[in-house]
Length: 468
Image (cartoon, rainbow, N blue to C red):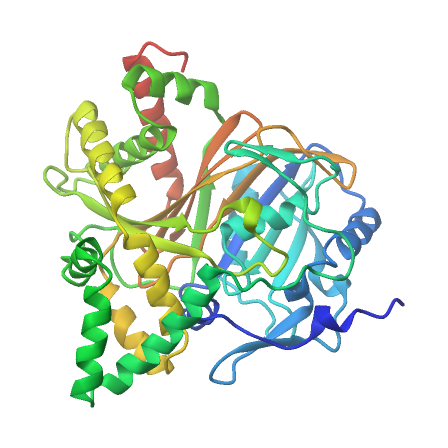
Protein backbone atom coordinates (compact mmCIF):
# COMPACT_ATOMS: atom_id res chain seq x y z
CA UNK A 1 0.00 0.00 0.00
CA UNK A 2 1.33 3.43 -0.90
CA UNK A 3 2.65 5.44 2.04
CA UNK A 4 0.79 8.68 2.55
CA UNK A 5 2.55 12.02 2.41
CA UNK A 6 2.83 13.25 6.05
CA UNK A 7 1.51 16.68 5.01
CA UNK A 8 -1.81 15.03 4.24
CA UNK A 9 -2.39 13.48 7.65
CA UNK A 10 -0.70 15.72 10.18
CA UNK A 11 -2.84 16.97 13.06
CA UNK A 12 -4.58 20.30 12.40
CA UNK A 13 -6.51 22.57 14.74
CA UNK A 14 -10.04 23.43 13.70
CA UNK A 15 -10.76 27.01 12.74
CA UNK A 16 -13.03 28.90 15.07
CA UNK A 17 -16.01 28.60 12.70
CA UNK A 18 -15.43 24.87 12.15
CA UNK A 19 -15.22 24.32 15.90
CA UNK A 20 -18.39 26.35 16.50
CA UNK A 21 -20.33 24.16 14.05
CA UNK A 22 -18.90 21.02 15.65
CA UNK A 23 -20.16 22.09 19.08
CA UNK A 24 -23.65 22.86 17.73
CA UNK A 25 -24.25 19.17 17.01
CA UNK A 26 -27.20 17.84 19.05
CA UNK A 27 -29.20 14.58 19.03
CA UNK A 28 -32.22 16.59 17.85
CA UNK A 29 -30.26 18.37 15.10
CA UNK A 30 -27.21 16.62 13.72
CA UNK A 31 -24.81 19.08 12.08
CA UNK A 32 -24.51 16.88 9.00
CA UNK A 33 -24.96 17.93 5.37
CA UNK A 34 -26.76 15.30 3.29
CA UNK A 35 -26.43 15.10 -0.49
CA UNK A 36 -28.02 12.81 -3.05
CA UNK A 37 -26.99 11.86 -6.59
CA UNK A 38 -29.45 9.83 -8.69
CA UNK A 39 -28.57 7.44 -11.53
CA UNK A 40 -30.55 5.49 -14.12
CA UNK A 41 -28.45 2.35 -13.69
CA UNK A 42 -26.64 0.27 -11.10
CA UNK A 43 -23.27 1.57 -9.93
CA UNK A 44 -20.21 -0.67 -10.06
CA UNK A 45 -19.14 -0.77 -6.40
CA UNK A 46 -15.54 -1.75 -7.12
CA UNK A 47 -15.11 0.95 -9.74
CA UNK A 48 -16.73 3.53 -7.47
CA UNK A 49 -14.54 2.56 -4.50
CA UNK A 50 -11.38 2.75 -6.61
CA UNK A 51 -12.37 6.17 -7.95
CA UNK A 52 -13.10 7.50 -4.48
CA UNK A 53 -9.80 6.20 -3.14
CA UNK A 54 -7.94 8.00 -5.93
CA UNK A 55 -9.89 11.23 -6.34
CA UNK A 56 -10.42 11.95 -2.64
CA UNK A 57 -6.71 11.61 -1.82
CA UNK A 58 -5.98 15.36 -2.13
CA UNK A 59 -8.48 16.21 0.64
CA UNK A 60 -6.70 15.70 4.00
CA UNK A 61 -9.78 16.18 6.17
CA UNK A 62 -11.40 13.08 4.73
CA UNK A 63 -8.63 10.96 6.31
CA UNK A 64 -8.69 12.72 9.66
CA UNK A 65 -10.94 12.16 12.66
CA UNK A 66 -12.18 14.90 14.93
CA UNK A 67 -10.90 15.10 18.48
CA UNK A 68 -12.95 17.15 20.93
CA UNK A 69 -10.37 18.07 23.53
CA UNK A 70 -11.75 21.48 24.44
CA UNK A 71 -10.28 23.31 21.44
CA UNK A 72 -10.97 20.66 18.80
CA UNK A 73 -8.55 19.43 16.18
CA UNK A 74 -8.18 16.93 13.37
CA UNK A 75 -5.74 14.06 13.65
CA UNK A 76 -4.90 11.09 11.39
CA UNK A 77 -7.24 8.12 11.67
CA UNK A 78 -4.81 5.25 12.27
CA UNK A 79 -7.37 2.75 10.98
CA UNK A 80 -8.52 4.74 7.97
CA UNK A 81 -9.94 2.77 5.06
CA UNK A 82 -12.23 3.97 2.30
CA UNK A 83 -14.20 0.76 2.73
CA UNK A 84 -15.38 2.06 6.12
CA UNK A 85 -17.00 5.00 4.34
CA UNK A 86 -18.87 3.26 1.52
CA UNK A 87 -21.87 1.02 2.12
CA UNK A 88 -24.49 -0.55 -0.18
CA UNK A 89 -28.04 -0.50 1.17
CA UNK A 90 -30.97 -2.39 -0.36
CA UNK A 91 -34.52 -1.09 0.10
CA UNK A 92 -37.49 -3.43 -0.39
CA UNK A 93 -39.70 -0.82 -2.07
CA UNK A 94 -39.19 1.35 -5.13
CA UNK A 95 -40.10 5.00 -5.56
CA UNK A 96 -39.43 8.33 -3.91
CA UNK A 97 -41.48 7.62 -0.78
CA UNK A 98 -39.25 4.71 0.29
CA UNK A 99 -36.11 6.68 -0.52
CA UNK A 100 -37.35 9.73 1.38
CA UNK A 101 -38.11 7.60 4.42
CA UNK A 102 -34.61 6.13 4.34
CA UNK A 103 -32.90 9.53 3.96
CA UNK A 104 -34.96 10.85 6.88
CA UNK A 105 -33.79 7.93 9.03
CA UNK A 106 -30.16 8.65 8.12
CA UNK A 107 -30.55 12.28 9.16
CA UNK A 108 -31.50 11.16 12.66
CA UNK A 109 -28.29 9.17 13.19
CA UNK A 110 -24.79 10.26 14.10
CA UNK A 111 -21.61 9.44 12.22
CA UNK A 112 -19.01 7.24 13.91
CA UNK A 113 -16.71 9.63 15.86
CA UNK A 114 -13.89 7.06 15.82
CA UNK A 115 -13.41 7.75 12.11
CA UNK A 116 -13.56 10.77 9.78
CA UNK A 117 -17.08 12.17 9.92
CA UNK A 118 -18.37 11.34 6.45
CA UNK A 119 -19.96 8.37 4.74
CA UNK A 120 -21.45 7.37 1.37
CA UNK A 121 -24.41 5.01 0.92
CA UNK A 122 -25.22 3.37 -2.42
CA UNK A 123 -28.99 2.89 -2.12
CA UNK A 124 -30.48 0.16 -4.29
CA UNK A 125 -34.22 -0.10 -5.03
CA UNK A 126 -36.16 -2.60 -7.14
CA UNK A 127 -36.48 -1.80 -10.86
CA UNK A 128 -34.59 1.49 -10.67
CA UNK A 129 -31.11 2.94 -10.80
CA UNK A 130 -28.95 3.46 -7.74
CA UNK A 131 -28.89 6.57 -5.57
CA UNK A 132 -25.69 7.75 -3.92
CA UNK A 133 -26.41 9.42 -0.57
CA UNK A 134 -23.51 11.35 0.96
CA UNK A 135 -23.27 12.60 4.56
CA UNK A 136 -20.51 14.85 5.88
CA UNK A 137 -20.27 16.77 9.13
CA UNK A 138 -20.62 20.54 8.84
CA UNK A 139 -17.44 21.06 10.86
CA UNK A 140 -15.44 19.64 7.93
CA UNK A 141 -16.99 21.63 5.09
CA UNK A 142 -19.71 24.03 4.03
CA UNK A 143 -21.88 23.76 0.91
CA UNK A 144 -19.47 25.52 -1.44
CA UNK A 145 -16.58 23.40 -0.18
CA UNK A 146 -18.64 20.32 -1.02
CA UNK A 147 -19.36 21.60 -4.52
CA UNK A 148 -15.58 21.97 -4.90
CA UNK A 149 -15.12 18.45 -3.55
CA UNK A 150 -17.71 17.11 -6.01
CA UNK A 151 -15.77 18.66 -8.90
CA UNK A 152 -12.89 16.40 -7.93
CA UNK A 153 -15.04 13.29 -8.31
CA UNK A 154 -16.80 13.76 -11.63
CA UNK A 155 -15.44 12.26 -14.83
CA UNK A 156 -14.11 15.46 -16.38
CA UNK A 157 -10.66 16.84 -17.13
CA UNK A 158 -12.03 20.20 -18.22
CA UNK A 159 -13.51 23.00 -16.09
CA UNK A 160 -17.10 22.52 -14.93
CA UNK A 161 -19.63 25.14 -16.05
CA UNK A 162 -21.56 26.72 -13.18
CA UNK A 163 -24.06 29.62 -13.29
CA UNK A 164 -21.34 32.08 -12.22
CA UNK A 165 -18.63 30.76 -14.60
CA UNK A 166 -16.34 27.79 -15.13
CA UNK A 167 -14.35 26.26 -12.27
CA UNK A 168 -11.33 23.98 -12.62
CA UNK A 169 -11.10 20.60 -10.92
CA UNK A 170 -9.21 20.34 -7.62
CA UNK A 171 -5.60 19.16 -7.87
CA UNK A 172 -4.87 15.44 -7.99
CA UNK A 173 -2.40 13.43 -5.94
CA UNK A 174 -1.39 13.43 -2.29
CA UNK A 175 0.21 16.81 -1.83
CA UNK A 176 -2.27 19.64 -1.23
CA UNK A 177 -1.33 23.21 -2.11
CA UNK A 178 0.19 25.20 0.76
CA UNK A 179 -2.30 26.69 3.19
CA UNK A 180 -2.59 30.34 2.26
CA UNK A 181 -2.28 33.11 4.79
CA UNK A 182 -4.31 35.70 2.96
CA UNK A 183 -5.95 38.79 4.40
CA UNK A 184 -9.25 37.02 5.10
CA UNK A 185 -7.64 34.25 7.13
CA UNK A 186 -5.52 36.72 9.08
CA UNK A 187 -8.69 38.67 9.86
CA UNK A 188 -10.37 35.51 11.13
CA UNK A 189 -7.42 34.71 13.38
CA UNK A 190 -7.67 38.25 14.70
CA UNK A 191 -11.36 37.66 15.41
CA UNK A 192 -10.45 34.75 17.66
CA UNK A 193 -8.02 36.88 19.64
CA UNK A 194 -10.61 39.65 19.80
CA UNK A 195 -13.10 37.19 21.30
CA UNK A 196 -10.68 36.18 24.05
CA UNK A 197 -9.90 39.85 24.74
CA UNK A 198 -13.62 40.63 24.96
CA UNK A 199 -14.03 38.05 27.74
CA UNK A 200 -11.11 39.54 29.66
CA UNK A 201 -12.47 43.03 29.00
CA UNK A 202 -15.55 42.36 31.09
CA UNK A 203 -13.38 42.67 34.20
CA UNK A 204 -11.09 45.42 32.87
CA UNK A 205 -12.68 48.82 32.11
CA UNK A 206 -9.69 50.00 30.07
CA UNK A 207 -9.82 46.95 27.82
CA UNK A 208 -13.61 47.29 27.56
CA UNK A 209 -13.24 50.87 26.33
CA UNK A 210 -10.67 49.76 23.74
CA UNK A 211 -12.97 46.96 22.54
CA UNK A 212 -15.87 49.38 22.19
CA UNK A 213 -13.66 51.65 20.10
CA UNK A 214 -12.80 48.77 17.79
CA UNK A 215 -16.49 47.95 17.28
CA UNK A 216 -17.34 51.58 16.58
CA UNK A 217 -14.54 51.56 14.03
CA UNK A 218 -16.44 48.95 12.03
CA UNK A 219 -18.73 51.72 10.84
CA UNK A 220 -22.32 52.78 11.34
CA UNK A 221 -23.81 50.02 9.21
CA UNK A 222 -22.01 47.34 11.20
CA UNK A 223 -23.15 48.79 14.50
CA UNK A 224 -26.71 48.98 13.17
CA UNK A 225 -26.53 45.38 11.95
CA UNK A 226 -25.31 44.20 15.36
CA UNK A 227 -28.14 46.11 17.05
CA UNK A 228 -30.70 44.54 14.71
CA UNK A 229 -29.37 41.05 15.39
CA UNK A 230 -29.47 41.53 19.16
CA UNK A 231 -32.96 43.02 19.22
CA UNK A 232 -34.80 40.63 16.89
CA UNK A 233 -38.26 39.67 18.07
CA UNK A 234 -39.24 36.06 18.59
CA UNK A 235 -40.75 34.19 15.68
CA UNK A 236 -44.59 34.13 15.41
CA UNK A 237 -46.20 31.23 17.25
CA UNK A 238 -46.98 28.78 14.43
CA UNK A 239 -46.86 25.01 14.10
CA UNK A 240 -43.41 25.37 12.50
CA UNK A 241 -41.87 26.48 15.80
CA UNK A 242 -41.51 24.30 18.88
CA UNK A 243 -39.47 21.68 20.69
CA UNK A 244 -37.46 19.42 18.41
CA UNK A 245 -37.29 15.65 18.45
CA UNK A 246 -34.84 13.15 16.98
CA UNK A 247 -36.96 11.95 14.04
CA UNK A 248 -36.53 13.80 10.71
CA UNK A 249 -38.45 13.60 7.44
CA UNK A 250 -37.62 14.77 3.93
CA UNK A 251 -39.25 15.44 0.60
CA UNK A 252 -38.43 17.15 -2.68
CA UNK A 253 -40.11 18.68 -5.70
CA UNK A 254 -40.06 17.46 -9.26
CA UNK A 255 -37.56 19.23 -11.53
CA UNK A 256 -38.58 22.80 -12.38
CA UNK A 257 -37.16 23.99 -15.75
CA UNK A 258 -34.70 26.80 -15.07
CA UNK A 259 -35.68 28.51 -18.33
CA UNK A 260 -39.21 28.93 -16.97
CA UNK A 261 -37.84 30.63 -13.86
CA UNK A 262 -35.59 32.90 -15.93
CA UNK A 263 -38.49 33.93 -18.18
CA UNK A 264 -40.42 34.90 -15.05
CA UNK A 265 -37.40 36.92 -13.91
CA UNK A 266 -37.35 38.88 -17.15
CA UNK A 267 -41.10 39.48 -17.03
CA UNK A 268 -41.02 40.60 -13.40
CA UNK A 269 -37.64 42.40 -13.46
CA UNK A 270 -36.09 40.40 -10.64
CA UNK A 271 -33.50 37.70 -10.01
CA UNK A 272 -33.86 33.91 -10.00
CA UNK A 273 -33.40 33.99 -6.25
CA UNK A 274 -36.21 36.55 -5.90
CA UNK A 275 -38.62 34.31 -7.83
CA UNK A 276 -37.73 31.14 -5.91
CA UNK A 277 -37.94 32.81 -2.49
CA UNK A 278 -41.21 34.58 -3.37
CA UNK A 279 -42.69 31.21 -4.33
CA UNK A 280 -41.41 29.73 -1.07
CA UNK A 281 -43.02 32.58 0.89
CA UNK A 282 -46.31 31.77 -0.81
CA UNK A 283 -45.81 28.07 -0.10
CA UNK A 284 -45.40 28.68 3.63
CA UNK A 285 -48.53 30.83 3.54
CA UNK A 286 -50.52 28.14 1.68
CA UNK A 287 -49.33 25.46 4.11
CA UNK A 288 -50.29 27.42 7.24
CA UNK A 289 -53.62 28.54 5.75
CA UNK A 290 -54.51 24.92 4.97
CA UNK A 291 -53.92 24.13 8.65
CA UNK A 292 -56.25 26.93 9.70
CA UNK A 293 -53.47 29.08 11.15
CA UNK A 294 -53.48 32.87 11.01
CA UNK A 295 -51.22 34.22 8.25
CA UNK A 296 -52.23 37.81 7.42
CA UNK A 297 -49.69 40.27 8.81
CA UNK A 298 -47.43 37.49 10.09
CA UNK A 299 -44.12 37.34 8.25
CA UNK A 300 -41.89 34.36 8.99
CA UNK A 301 -38.18 34.81 9.52
CA UNK A 302 -35.66 32.50 7.86
CA UNK A 303 -31.89 32.12 8.10
CA UNK A 304 -30.00 32.35 4.80
CA UNK A 305 -26.33 31.26 4.49
CA UNK A 306 -24.17 33.61 2.39
CA UNK A 307 -20.94 32.36 0.84
CA UNK A 308 -17.89 34.51 1.62
CA UNK A 309 -15.19 32.84 -0.49
CA UNK A 310 -15.74 32.28 -4.24
CA UNK A 311 -15.67 28.70 -5.43
CA UNK A 312 -12.59 29.28 -7.59
CA UNK A 313 -10.71 30.31 -4.43
CA UNK A 314 -11.63 27.18 -2.46
CA UNK A 315 -8.90 24.68 -1.61
CA UNK A 316 -8.59 21.02 -0.65
CA UNK A 317 -8.56 22.14 2.99
CA UNK A 318 -12.37 22.56 2.72
CA UNK A 319 -13.75 24.25 5.87
CA UNK A 320 -16.51 26.78 6.55
CA UNK A 321 -16.37 30.25 5.06
CA UNK A 322 -19.91 31.59 5.03
CA UNK A 323 -22.02 33.95 7.08
CA UNK A 324 -25.71 34.04 7.95
CA UNK A 325 -28.40 36.65 7.42
CA UNK A 326 -31.92 36.77 8.83
CA UNK A 327 -34.58 37.37 6.17
CA UNK A 328 -38.22 38.20 6.83
CA UNK A 329 -40.23 36.23 4.28
CA UNK A 330 -43.36 38.18 3.22
CA UNK A 331 -45.73 35.37 4.17
CA UNK A 332 -48.09 37.86 5.77
CA UNK A 333 -48.87 39.53 2.42
CA UNK A 334 -51.85 38.08 0.58
CA UNK A 335 -51.05 39.28 -2.95
CA UNK A 336 -48.20 37.56 -4.84
CA UNK A 337 -47.13 40.86 -6.42
CA UNK A 338 -46.78 42.39 -2.97
CA UNK A 339 -44.78 39.38 -1.78
CA UNK A 340 -42.35 39.76 -4.67
CA UNK A 341 -41.97 43.52 -4.17
CA UNK A 342 -41.39 43.25 -0.43
CA UNK A 343 -39.04 40.29 -0.72
CA UNK A 344 -36.96 42.05 -3.38
CA UNK A 345 -36.67 45.15 -1.16
CA UNK A 346 -35.58 43.07 1.81
CA UNK A 347 -33.07 41.03 -0.19
CA UNK A 348 -31.57 44.18 -1.70
CA UNK A 349 -31.18 45.64 1.80
CA UNK A 350 -29.44 42.49 3.03
CA UNK A 351 -27.03 42.58 0.09
CA UNK A 352 -25.90 46.02 1.28
CA UNK A 353 -25.68 44.89 4.90
CA UNK A 354 -22.50 43.62 6.62
CA UNK A 355 -24.64 41.08 8.51
CA UNK A 356 -23.17 38.00 6.78
CA UNK A 357 -19.59 39.01 7.52
CA UNK A 358 -20.43 39.90 11.11
CA UNK A 359 -22.13 36.58 11.80
CA UNK A 360 -19.15 34.72 10.33
CA UNK A 361 -16.71 36.66 12.49
CA UNK A 362 -18.98 35.91 15.45
CA UNK A 363 -18.88 32.18 14.72
CA UNK A 364 -15.13 32.34 14.20
CA UNK A 365 -14.75 34.03 17.57
CA UNK A 366 -17.18 31.74 19.39
CA UNK A 367 -15.17 28.70 18.36
CA UNK A 368 -12.26 30.04 20.40
CA UNK A 369 -14.37 30.53 23.53
CA UNK A 370 -15.33 27.96 26.20
CA UNK A 371 -18.41 25.99 25.18
CA UNK A 372 -20.51 27.63 27.92
CA UNK A 373 -19.76 31.06 26.46
CA UNK A 374 -20.69 29.90 22.95
CA UNK A 375 -23.97 28.46 24.19
CA UNK A 376 -24.76 31.69 26.05
CA UNK A 377 -24.30 33.79 22.92
CA UNK A 378 -26.16 31.40 20.59
CA UNK A 379 -29.06 31.26 23.02
CA UNK A 380 -29.81 34.85 22.01
CA UNK A 381 -30.78 33.57 18.54
CA UNK A 382 -32.94 30.61 19.55
CA UNK A 383 -36.57 31.00 18.56
CA UNK A 384 -35.79 33.80 16.10
CA UNK A 385 -36.50 31.88 12.87
CA UNK A 386 -38.85 29.19 11.52
CA UNK A 387 -36.53 27.84 8.84
CA UNK A 388 -33.15 27.91 7.18
CA UNK A 389 -33.00 28.28 3.38
CA UNK A 390 -29.96 27.48 1.25
CA UNK A 391 -29.79 28.17 -2.49
CA UNK A 392 -26.80 26.51 -4.19
CA UNK A 393 -25.92 26.87 -7.90
CA UNK A 394 -24.97 23.51 -9.36
CA UNK A 395 -23.38 22.42 -12.65
CA UNK A 396 -25.13 23.66 -15.80
CA UNK A 397 -24.47 20.45 -17.74
CA UNK A 398 -25.02 16.78 -16.96
CA UNK A 399 -22.04 15.09 -15.30
CA UNK A 400 -20.70 11.55 -15.04
CA UNK A 401 -19.43 9.75 -11.96
CA UNK A 402 -17.48 6.49 -12.24
CA UNK A 403 -18.69 6.17 -15.84
CA UNK A 404 -22.39 6.71 -15.07
CA UNK A 405 -24.52 9.73 -15.95
CA UNK A 406 -25.77 11.64 -12.91
CA UNK A 407 -29.48 12.09 -13.61
CA UNK A 408 -30.15 14.47 -10.75
CA UNK A 409 -28.69 16.02 -7.60
CA UNK A 410 -30.18 17.25 -4.33
CA UNK A 411 -28.93 18.16 -0.87
CA UNK A 412 -30.15 19.19 2.57
CA UNK A 413 -28.43 21.36 5.14
CA UNK A 414 -28.70 20.79 8.89
CA UNK A 415 -30.61 23.21 11.06
CA UNK A 416 -29.40 24.77 14.30
CA UNK A 417 -30.56 26.84 17.26
CA UNK A 418 -33.93 25.15 17.53
CA UNK A 419 -34.89 25.59 13.87
CA UNK A 420 -36.91 22.61 12.69
CA UNK A 421 -37.37 23.20 8.95
CA UNK A 422 -34.57 23.27 6.37
CA UNK A 423 -35.19 24.17 2.72
CA UNK A 424 -32.58 23.56 0.04
CA UNK A 425 -32.70 24.85 -3.54
CA UNK A 426 -30.25 23.36 -6.03
CA UNK A 427 -29.87 23.84 -9.79
CA UNK A 428 -28.44 21.17 -12.07
CA UNK A 429 -28.45 20.50 -15.80
CA UNK A 430 -31.06 23.11 -16.72
CA UNK A 431 -33.44 22.38 -13.84
CA UNK A 432 -33.93 23.32 -10.23
CA UNK A 433 -35.29 21.32 -7.31
CA UNK A 434 -36.42 22.29 -3.85
CA UNK A 435 -35.90 19.89 -0.97
CA UNK A 436 -37.35 20.02 2.55
CA UNK A 437 -35.87 18.40 5.65
CA UNK A 438 -37.97 18.82 8.78
CA UNK A 439 -38.45 17.78 12.35
CA UNK A 440 -41.19 15.14 12.35
CA UNK A 441 -42.90 16.76 15.33
CA UNK A 442 -43.22 20.14 13.62
CA UNK A 443 -43.72 19.19 9.97
CA UNK A 444 -44.86 15.59 9.91
CA UNK A 445 -45.58 15.64 6.17
CA UNK A 446 -42.98 17.78 4.37
CA UNK A 447 -44.65 16.71 1.14
CA UNK A 448 -47.44 19.16 1.99
CA UNK A 449 -44.98 22.07 1.89
CA UNK A 450 -43.45 20.71 -1.33
CA UNK A 451 -46.92 20.50 -2.92
CA UNK A 452 -47.63 24.08 -1.85
CA UNK A 453 -44.37 25.22 -3.45
CA UNK A 454 -45.14 23.50 -6.74
CA UNK A 455 -48.60 25.09 -6.70
CA UNK A 456 -47.01 28.53 -6.19
CA UNK A 457 -44.63 28.00 -9.10
CA UNK A 458 -47.53 26.94 -11.36
CA UNK A 459 -49.53 29.98 -10.29
CA UNK A 460 -46.54 32.24 -10.97
CA UNK A 461 -46.06 30.75 -14.43
CA UNK A 462 -49.75 31.36 -15.15
CA UNK A 463 -49.62 35.00 -14.08
CA UNK A 464 -46.80 35.85 -16.46
CA UNK A 465 -48.17 33.52 -19.19
CA UNK A 466 -45.27 31.07 -19.10
CA UNK A 467 -45.31 27.31 -19.71
CA UNK A 468 -46.01 25.62 -16.37
